[in-house]
Length: 320
Image (cartoon, rainbow, N blue to C red; front, side, top):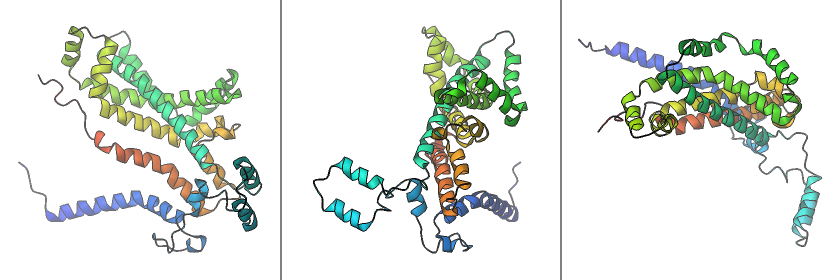
């Protein structure tokens, strides 16, 4: 028998949900608000800035900064000399470009994007093959290997940091930028593979085996079945795993702070934010703007593919 919930309980539950959601999103609104305030407005407790300030975002994205410190006389000279080549103009402007206070946000953004995207892609690829073997194949020691994969999570990253660093140094990986990048890729994959295998393995078990049998009767191989049957029916779970792996690599700081210490050109966004925070240019609007830009890709990724995360695509897969 279904009992009707009383209005008081419904209102109380609604208020509780609003409180929890507000508590979670308030720091993001505060971060956005501070990034859009001028220095004289930082003491304003309101989340709405008195006057919108976008200079921090322009500095981080290097928008309109080339001509910021150029004297008016030089600008007039450039405008009144049409015969001057582009190389000559760039040479003159380079003398007035102050690179000491420029935060290379685009470079750090691309570094994080490349590292996170590749690591998540490799993790998903390996997880698909591993999860399929756990859910469909029968071999000696399968349950032991499956449980052993989750054994990785019994140890925190701080315990594995020094041993992994010594191993990479002994193998010579950290002597080059490519080796350092590859070492971080392997570490990020190891961090995300256990849960990826667990999530995809459980999802693959919900797909009726009769679909695979029909494909195999038609002459499809195991890899063909995975490519034509399993992946299309599990696309929502695969996207979820990819986002999970991407977020882990995107926000990772511990290993990056040690492995990338000698290569400033390979800094990721978390390391860049740390460098900005302790630099002479650590002003709150710039720090908060960099934080907003760092969080934006993950938020946008969730919003774009949100509808694909709420349900599987295997419904109706056995229809004749």
